[in-house]
Image (cartoon, rainbow, N blue to C red; front, side, top):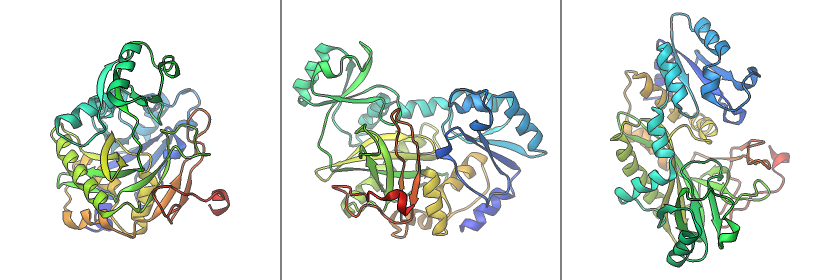
Length: 371
């Protein structure tokens, strides 16, 4: 199915779309969709924290949606699902274009995600789940080596992941007796991501993108991602392996009722692929990646995401749509520098690869001049 065809079906559907923009750097521009509106947190100064549930539940926002939609049904598109969004949508008989929050929480939980991968024999870095204390820290140093990585259940932009070679360096960073995941700090060559959309016809994947992780001067946190690029320049064997792991993972989450957009992160070490985490929602790269798809006249994964939650009557040539995984014309780079609090402070987009190599990643120093 061509982009125009699905776009027409979406435009002719009995819905009006409201995309909740809590973070301006996660905004998306879709002038092709005639009933696509954006609700910006910045327009409602009474809401003091970045929270899409609070934004949607704001009386002024509810009034705006009800007065704006006319005879059409509001379809709410959050970047990230939440119980509050589930509640507000159900209360107002609005369509929630996101997975139920319990499914999202389950897959975003770094400890539960690791156990899920272990259950289905997906390749992950070796790990142990235990409480955080000095005795266990020393125990897992003995098992995995001096340098450990510890992860708590939830976090973003690297704020739930810590590394340390001694108890003194980490004892004050995590609350005592918190359940954490202990892993060895492995020497990895680079990290990759792919955006995916699970449709009723099957899984559609983007090509793997090279992640810019822990790169100075864009962040001081070595676990924080500050951008990505297509193509990844990873070897064909690695790319093929990622395709298979992603397909297997898609089948697993289909069984628990998941559908639509999600992202997977991978670490590459000694030509081995390790599945690192799942982002069970729209991803930080989805807006820019959508631009790249549109440039290539591809049906955006985001359109399939909408179609799945709206239960639209559409058909696709799955093999054709899956061909984008090997599409060499999907090209672009995005840099998202972080400030001292680890928040994105800028977004730079380029429709060419910034780095020609995966290890090391080499990014020009004069990016602002080129943008």
